[in-house]
Image (cartoon, protein in one colour):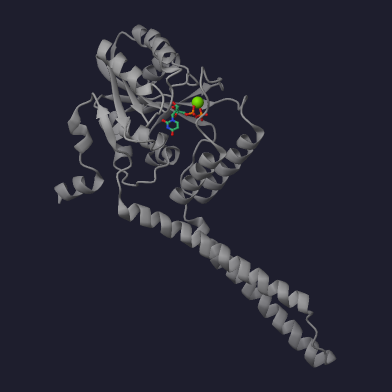
Length: 327
Ligand code: UDP
Ligand code: MG
């Protein structure tokens, strides 16, 4: 009998959790060869999410929950779930039923029978999503994929089930600003993809504002590629070449035609151009420095205020401590 934990990040999902539980239980009940835990991570909800989870956990021993002291974001919720999960297989699924539970038996089959390390879902279409969001998202993935050594599937969900070794690999990455789609791809392993249509939320509203999505995109780009840091070199080279050419042109005009005439507007625009470029690059540098600062501070990614899981896991050694122990 294989053991499986399904992690469910929840932020103000009181409306949908009972329905989610009902639907998932139906599917899990059919998977006779596995013993499941549902690990709900309450990401600082302000609605009745935590009360519902407590009540469910009272009734059913396979329902586990971790509750954060405030909202730390879905990335933190997934990380917490992976740190606490102590089973052979670990999965992640959204609470809003946009990830069809029907796939779970097929995913387990891919791991168990077909020998894959990861079974993950990707979308076949972006129906029901705003044009702006689809556009920004496809631009974003193409920037990350072209400038980094990872390849993120444009259409992948966070919906997946992984073998223990994959989860351990993910947990061994020490970064605090976490971008899981990048991390999932970075650790590698053998993935089986399942096609999955876009489904409307069963209830409640999306927790992503445009601002949150942009922050997520920046975390992805800055976390997985240092290419922007190389931009100043190429821009500098370009301005250098142009300035040398202009200089030579000016000298030639002066000698041949005895004229000195770069107009003031041209001069001004050249100065503004170089000035503007410099500020942009200082800004990019600043972003990386700010992130180094956050990483050096090494604050915990989340703080747990309540759980019915084994307390030890919370104190499980992080990457640094594990390394120190080895030394
Ligand atoms: N979520 C979370 N913390 C957050 C935002 C979202 O745990 O700060 C959870 C949310 O409860 C849901 C999943 O992450 O289970 C996906 O969120 P949502 O459905 O709002 O995103 P979308 O499906 O629109 O991308
Ligand atoms: Mg959703």
